[in-house]
Amino acid sequence: MLRVFLDDSGSHTNSKLCAVAGYFGGTLSWYCFERMWNKVLRRARIREFHAKDFWGRTETGEKVGPFKGWSDEKSEGLLNDLLSVIRRARVYPVGAGMVMKDWNVLTKPERRFLTGAQVLAGGKFRTQGAPTKAHFLPFEFCVQKTLVYCRHKERLHVSFDLDESANSLHGWTPIYFAHVKKLLLENTERLGSLSFDSSVDAPPLQAADLLAYRIREHAEARLVDPQAKQDAVLMRALSRKRSTDDFKLFNARAFDLLLDEFRNQVANGA
Figure 1 (cartoon, rainbow, N blue to C red):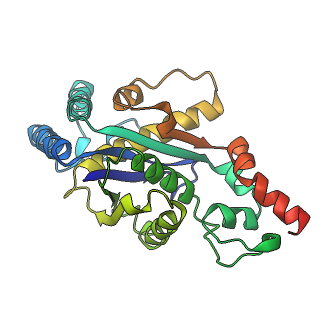
Figure 2 (cartoon, helix red, strand yellow; figure 1 turned 90 degrees about the vertical axis):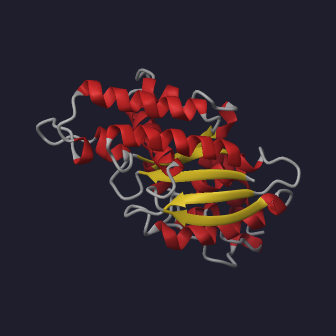
């Protein structure tokens, strides 16, 4: 069985970008991952890793949460150890981001179309979709890309982080998961189950949290300055990427391509 662990970043803030990302791998790889990851946490005497706490700072520049009072050297040591676990465990990254200003200027029918609404002739809708849920496309992309790596008769299990920031996603993700099954006609038999898990009980979700956070931070920096330097931490977190095709940014250009046929259908009334 192939398992992918996904988390979101930027869904409940005024972020310029939202992201869904994580890692996929086989059962043995995840077994090895959890043993190594938990060993690092025990050595650091923390219960779990949260990117928002790790990189968060007070107004005076002090570390927060379980990392309050840590030296920079201790923090860097923990991060190096966790990134080494990701590298050694043979798990592979996948992720997608969405530029919120480009999403927000789309019409409601366009956003309904992009979030799984079924369209009839003339651009009329049979189902509602979820035009307020920008995470649908990044989530769908991650699931689709991971399915490509399923071997013959192998099934994919999707695990999504259920923490305080994801509680509101608990309602829409199963609906979208069902939509994904309908969309993936040739691979639908490989798409298994969806579960919501605590990151304490499922350490791979902590790695997904790290990746989603760094993807969003780096992409937002690039939106402000296209020449922004590479994120060294992100590069290490992506060191086992299988293909550049496993990552995507949904921006105005991407939306134009995805909506071209729908817009023509609406314009022609057929």
